[in-house]
Length: 247
Image (tube, rainbow, N blue to C red; front, side):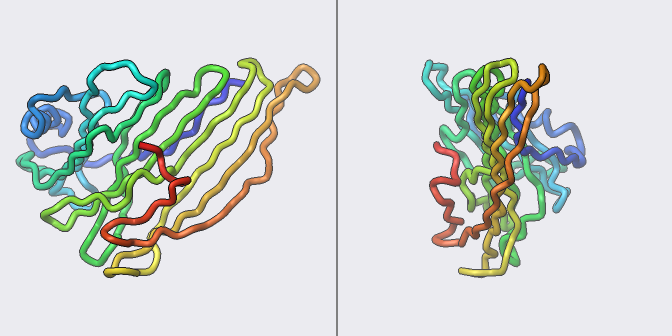
C-alpha cells in the first residue's frame, strides 16, 4: 500500500497579463512591496481573475529566516493587480502565514470559485497545503482562506478553514490505517451586515489495510457526515478551532 494524501487544490486556468505572463510580474511586485525579503517564486502563484479578467490575483510567498524548527514559517502577500499594467490595486500582508512541518512539502493555489459573500462583495480564496505522505506516518492538510474585494480594498474574511486533512500509520508495505476528512463550502442566505453565511459539508472516512491471502486489501469504513454553518461576525467568518489549521 503506497497511500498518497489527497489534498484539495484549485487548478483553474485563465488569461495572463496582457503584456507578459503574470509570473514575470511576481518579482516586480515583491520588489515593490518587500524589497528586503526573498521571494519564493516556486511557491508563489498568480492568475487573471475569471470573474473580472481586468484584474490579476497573486499569492506571494517570502522565505523564512532559515532557522531550524519543528515548523518553518514563511510570510504571505495576497494582492490584486491591474491585468493590463501590472499595477497593484490592493494587497494584504500576513507574516508567518505559511506553515510547513519538517519533512513535508508545501503548496499554494488560488481558488477563483464565485464566492459572492455580499451583494457588492466578491471573494477569492488562497489554499495552502502541507503534504507529508511519505514514510510510516503519512499526514497532510489543506486550508482555505477567503479575501473580499470591493474594487478598492482587499480584506481577509475567512482564516484557514481546514478543507482537507489526513493522517495514518502503516508498516510501509501494507498493514495500517488511514483517516481522511474533507469539507466543501457553499454560500448560504444573507445574514449580519448583508453577508451570506458559509455552509460547510464535512465527510470523514476511516480506512484499514491488511494482507489477506497474500494480497494487500484496503477497506473503507462508512463515511461519517455532518453539516455546519459559519456566520459572519465582526468583519469575519468565525471558524471553530477544531476546523482551523493552527498558525
